[in-house]
Figure 1 (cartoon, rainbow, N blue to C red):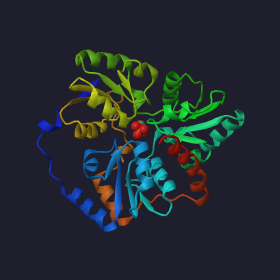
Figure 2: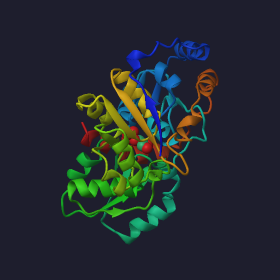
Figure 3: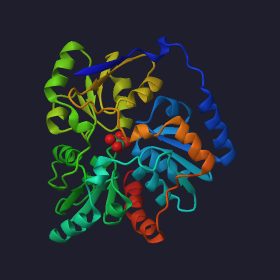
Figure 4: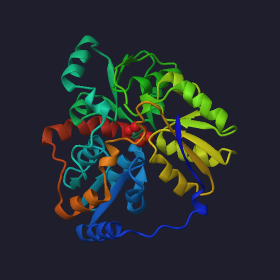
Length: 322
Ligand code: 13P
């Protein structure tokens, strides 16, 4: 297993804004735009974004912004969610090709067929899915509110959970609820191997391991904490150890270091096919962010009916996770 050890940020020299970062801030002002960035995008974008957070926090920000343009540094389903919550605004994504394996592994036609086989089941979908899958869902959830949302569903109600089987199995373990799981997975998080992480914990004795619930069960079982990217901040801040091993997309560590500059973070990177730099998130380069603010392209466009239908389960999620 490979690692990248990030020393405490407060021991490192302060970095200056680059020319492209300055140009982005300038273009943002001219466009009356807001830059929303997921915890998984590169450091240069995180440094200048108006808000950096998890999928839940980003949805809340998208709902309340009064900017004319939302520049979404993330992947397409996140930018689509922002558009659904704000149909009158221009939403741009630096690279239209930035998608998500989970989204690709849940075809709306197959989900519609699956629903027919389980009439009466409530469909809860992880936000990592297309707008078409959202239309077929009763409630959306994120990794930050999934436990809370599933716990609010009456015990006798059958639930289909799509598309992430690993997040779904973690929710079942934690809530004691049975659910019918869709068999999607995140390519990056499923590359970790439990044995390698056990060896890493031995090498960094005393450092707790935190992982994302998209990791398979055998990986989650060797972790000290399993949580969404946002909850990783409070876990790492409150833990007594000054060194923490992080098993999720490596760019998460930029956010952790800025929030907790006095600690050392150890990024766990699987051997074999190292995947923990999410290739989709990395399509968000500072140059493409600048170009999308200048050109207002590529834009997220969704038809009116899709927006109307997909808004219902997203609003339900926001209501249920206040
Ligand atoms: P969060 O819910 O922590 O934002 O996770 C999103 C994600 O896509 C993880 O791979």
